[in-house]
Length: 520
Image 1 (cartoon, helix red, strand yellow):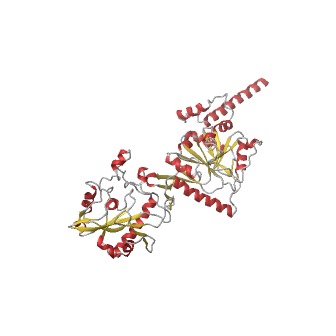
Image 2 (cartoon, helix red, strand yellow):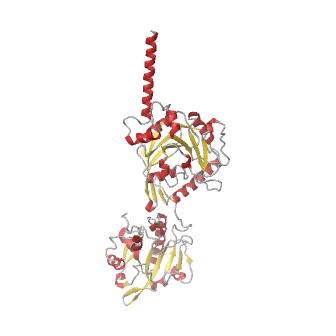
Image 3 (cartoon, one colour):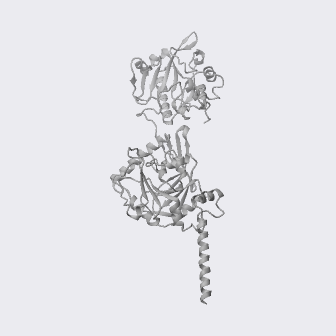
């Protein structure tokens, strides 16, 4: 009986070991559901067999580095959050990343086993800090990283185990895990148009998206960090998600086994205000650094992070009729287009009130006939005016002698480059409308200042202005020549309306740049 009982116990133990081994293999994606590439990737890191598998805890601690990036120096719960993690995973590597040394300091007693694998990395430049020491990627030796928010708690190992299992099914992706009793976490998609400096957010209808809003943790392959322009940019993780979305990285939101919360932060009104101000400043810096000046939120709200009337415009002096942003493969920043539209509408209104005969000129007329707006890459608005009508307009008369500011803050001045006028958006922001005085000489419209770099700057028959017509432009009807198609082909050449070309196509082509813009 004893022998039979011992044999039975032995068989049961063997069966239990087999079941446990199968579970581990399944957890690591070793069953047939995983593709061969994923299996080979993991096996290359550490061959898995029954001799070197100790436990799923060991595998997680060997494969993941936990990183803290989103916390404030003046109030945080980082030490207690780390205690919660290392009490569960005592051998896991932890990085605490901050711009500079936290003040007050974070105290991690190295003699305490709970903190023996914790390392702090400071990103700021310092004569006492080497490039390697301040670059977190040099400190990460694992295949995966798990970014944890401040004041988190691990209530069950199933959370990270589930995340670890999911990441093997979504290799080039992020697995995001939620928290208990926090505000709802939103899963959003993004549409990024770098050429137009725009990002738009919209709600996602499933658990797959590109941007997660709300408290959560993130697990993904370390290699993804190497693809981004600034992996640890603040505010984190917002800056991470925008950069990752531009690289086509998806995020899968996991609601099962949520993490727990630690102490509530920023209950003090002053600290709450400080945290909100920092978030606002970092968000502004983030969008400007990433070249995104117009942000359309998921609720339709539009936020601007470019130039304003009280700031300089987004680009400097234009050389050879080709603004700097064109050389960067971009179009006019949307904030600049908005300022140009506003200035142009104001000028049209003033000229009409004083009954001056004006018409839309050059590239502005080209934009009007194509889509009723400023060309997507243009940097000013051009208007022609009968020279004898200048005396009808008070602001042009005043501008003859000195720059003058009208009641709405627009600056009227005589241009220093020649015999024409310029109306600026403001004293600081020099987005402008150019007004060129023409006069008739033997039935030909001519003027006293010409620009060799503007191929369209030429004389033309006066009959194009007798009578004047109108066209829709920047949201209103404005004066225009009476045969716009022929007028523009005279100025720009045959097919100019149907075949858009950037300024200076020969120079751009010679330097390897695109000369024909994509269609809107």
